[in-house]
Length: 142
Image (cartoon, rainbow, N blue to C red; front, side, top):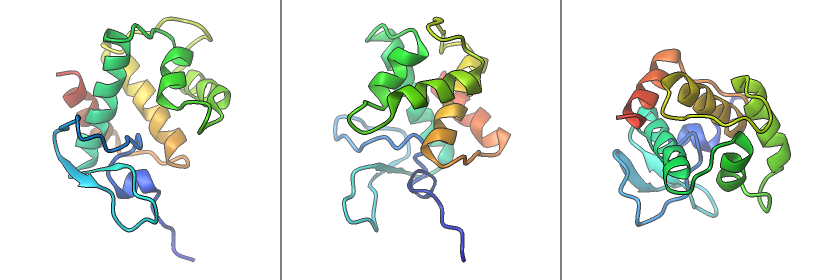
């Protein structure tokens, strides 16, 4: 049986960011194709998809004042679509963050761990090569 890529990997959008006309992300190619109900953005490279994921998380901290994994993931993956509690626990475990602890996503190591955990959760355990992840995070923090 052939292994198929997850939707996020296929779209080079590992955070599964919805296409929003107000967002003009670097490298955004438009709406995903080949699915019955398209909703997610497609990107030219995984690095630009990771960049968009990181930029979105930074907006959550800067504009909306979200400081904990629970606050951020509750906005990222609302409970109407996800088991948000399990998602929060997975990100906390994968980043070594204590429940309720405040995090600073402007710190490269924190952003990298957070993004890596989201990619893992959104894409059935998928992990990009370290260089791809690092470059996407670097672009997000510019």
